[in-house]
Amino acid sequence: MKCALVTGGSRGIGKAVCIKMAAMGYYVLVNYKSNVTEAENTLAAIKAQGGDGALLQFDVSDKQQIQDVLGNWIETNTDSYIEVLVNNAGIKEDALMSWMEDAQWDNVLRTNLDSFFYVTRLVLKSMMPQRYGRIVNVVSLSGLKGLPGQTNYSAAKAGVIGATKALAQEVARQNITVNAVAPGFIKTDMIEGIEEKDIQKLVPARRFGQPEEVAHAVGFLASPEAAYITGQVLSVNGGLYS
Ligand code: NAP
Image (tube, rainbow, N blue to C red; front, side):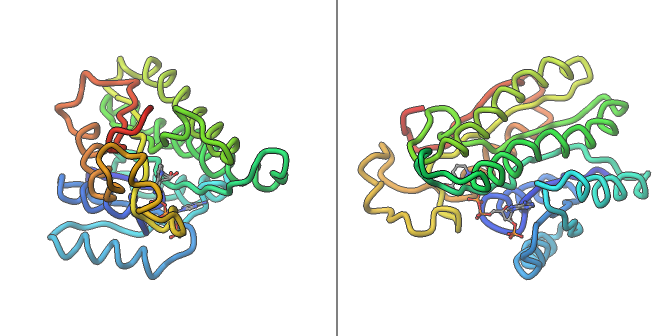
């Protein structure tokens, strides 16, 4: 069975990506941290369109949980293979750097950057022998441009962009591509409190993006036809400077 693992699949962009992966014919492993109700809603949406999948709960910022839950899933499901990995789970904890607390730095780096390393290394071990795979990392405009109040988040996302480019060169011979999608302002819980009318004028497209518009870009990079595209960052931001 060919699977797509989407971290942070319970809400927002991850949920839209799960639905996209199901439409592409994948059995979808929907990862989430704590919101089981929303994760079940994602799975129900997958099933409603004729797809299938399962929930896989672990905290991507915890390398032991990744090993225990994901490692165990890989070991016990020997007839299944994760062909597509979408590293999407992420958080932000904004503060000006002079006021930023240790925990704000650590949480954001662990959830957005360390997670890439621990999840991808584990999945790669089974992807490499198959000599085929697609890895898509959800980064951010903030990691390309840098945004004030987000030194932690910008550093984490820029770190993932660097890792994307390096890993792409390591695994290209195994027909595994590694790319990133960099959203601008997308209507999800993450940007709750940011008023569209306040930001609108900064965005050439004059609106926030929809999660499905990011999922479309992820689906493109995850498709077999995108075999010769690797190490790239595709912005989905309505024309914002990047
Ligand atoms: P969201 O609506 O806040 O959803 C976050 C998702 O990540 C949820 O499914 C959440 O699970 C999961 N998650 C958070 N921490 C986790 C952890 N430690 N372990 C496992 N899962 C975890 O966020 P979003 O806007 O869809 O963001 C998705 C990605 O896009 C993130 O990487 C974010 O940085 C990036 N991004 C978003 C925007 C934007 O404007 N929205 C812009 C640029 C980049 P629970 O439901 O269990 O909490």
